[in-house]
Length: 233
Image (cartoon, rainbow, N blue to C red):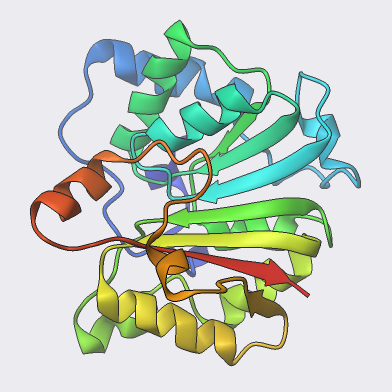
């Protein structure tokens, strides 16, 4: 079952499109045949130790919310095989792109989820993640749509619950109003500290950052990205 077949009423934190251009037949086959083997099954109880989700022996677990075409997720899961990665992307075309890439670069430390990240967060055990990545989320720039932004008090509560003490929430965006929004909301939350120590820090890419196509477009159009790291207290 793909994301668009699931009851819309269950979604809380996803408001974007579920599908773009029609998938090629091979992409549709990957969604139908390969995704079920990688999908995290929320109908089953979450394991107390997330390492049990992965085929590879892993020491840590990391979540990426809204991975787009999967470039960053593919890079990170390849450079850190001792970490188990869970990638969330409800947009079918993005999921198909990642599944296609995995044919040439398979990962046994990767699991996927193709619906609302809020449901996955509620399923995860307490203090089970070492890091959460939210890269270039939909900014919902109109004021009437600000309530749709993924960074909000309720989702920060979710992050604080599932992150281990000392775990990291990383946020990247080229939209200054969303950057300010995120700084303000995290500052109002008791669970996190912003790790920046000098002004240049929030414009310095994360260690090992591979860049993304969205970022390249933003830089071409004159929007400097911000890279924010918050640590769970």
